[in-house]
Image (cartoon, rainbow, N blue to C red):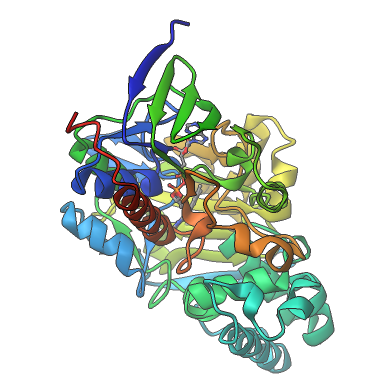
Amino acid sequence: MAISTERADVVVVGAGISGLVAATRLAAAGHDVRVLEARDRVGGRTLNADLGDGKIVEVGGQFTGPGQYAIQRVAAELGVSTFATHDTGASLLELNGRARRWLVGRPWIGVTPTVSYLRAQRALDRMARRVPAEAPWLAPDAARWDGQTLGSWLRRHVRSPRARTLLTMAVRAVWSIEPDDVSLLHILACISAGESLRRLVSTRAGAQQDRFVGGSQRIAELLAERLPEPPRLGHPVRRIVQDGDRVTVHADGLTVSTHRVVVTAPPMLASRIDYQPALPPGRAQLLARTPQGTTLKCLAVYAEPFWRRTGLSGQVASDTGPVGAAFDNSPPDGDPGILLGFVVGGHARRLLDLPPADRRAAVLTCFARWFGAEALTPQRFLVGSWSEEEWTRGCYAGYFTPGTWTSHGPWLRRPHGRIHWAGAETATRWIGFMDGAVTAGERAAGEVCAALRAEGAVSEVAR
Ligand SMILES: Cc1cc2nc3c(=O)[nH]c(=O)nc-3n(C[C@H](O)[C@H](O)[C@H](O)COP(=O)(O)OP(=O)(O)OC[C@H]3O[C@@H](n4cnc5c(N)ncnc54)[C@H](O)[C@@H]3O)c2cc1C
């Protein structure tokens, strides 16, 4: 492939929400910015699937809710409004293959288990209030909490097996991981950054309350349209070489010489770039110890939302699986009817071993168990299998294994020479969410502007 060479003030690696927010802020400050994106589209972990007739459905990140001021501010600036997630009717709670109607937010699983669940939720929220989300390693009990998994804490402190099951289901739904995968301190940092566990798991008054009209990828597309230089698509960055006062970014088919770089790829992918000089051991180990969750986001499209006829909301929480959480994901006018099933954590790892036809059958069997045989014959069936996406490799986000925050946390946002770090995983509010992607992009853009000002670097535009 022929390699062309360009010059720019700043290179942003990745055209997800974080990279595009960083780039628009840098461009607004007068800097000449190049965004290099591996995929042939913008949006990263946000993706709209076109259903025809002007209708779309979201295959990646989609929900927003109270307290997510940054993504809602950016969306409003771009003219993207929100609408309420369908939340009318009874929801289902399925335990051990038995589904019953329940009031979401009131975990009625018997008196003792309910009390036990609520006590554990309150205890986690109380502990989270002592964790500064911008520096979890400074929490008074950081070493103790980072030295155990959430799973070991649940076994020690939640006596009721049913309550533990419900908490495990919540962890799978919110982080797409199993409680034994993750540091307790990481979960507390995420709760602290997301206000409370109740807020994280809830639809009404919670993180799943609203969706973006036209889909969340629209936000990325509109940000990209605002850039003076459109993102360069299909240019994966392979190597970043710092040499004196310049940095050379080597992508497939394109090399850019620049002053500063912002890397927004999730940790697993940021670790695959070859950095010269090499990353300091602390930063390299941080990246190596940050795996990503496992989710298959499955969407079944029907002529109408038939489950509403029998008074069901379409929302389900299940320990039986493989779908662990379901939603009515129809457009605002309910046409077509769309069921969304999240296959997450261990269930997702097992489903990934099956061929596509078996995955589809397993998911539709869940829908039929809950909503009747009509669910077996959708007009369309779509799957976002994010662990199989070369340029994502798992979702919703990177998470920290035990010991990582306390050993390597301070490296998370510390620049490596002229390289700055953004992406939803580096956020201090709503870690791993679209909201976090925005604030991380803005923070990195601020760092770069300050550095360029301090150096008195002359814009390439001005030359
Ligand atoms: C199925 C799913 C459901 C989710 N649900 C929600 C939700 O309901 N609400 C919510 O707020 N969040 C949700 N999220 C998370 C949310 O989508 C992400 O936090 C957010 O979109 C991350 O944005 P980002 O810019 O930080 O990273 P990304 O979107 O991952 O962008 C990084 C970009 O870098 C590119 N890239 C990677 N490596 C290279 C390289 N070497 N060279 C060039 N480019 C590279 C990638 O292609 C990508 O475009 C969900 C995510 C998924 C996948």
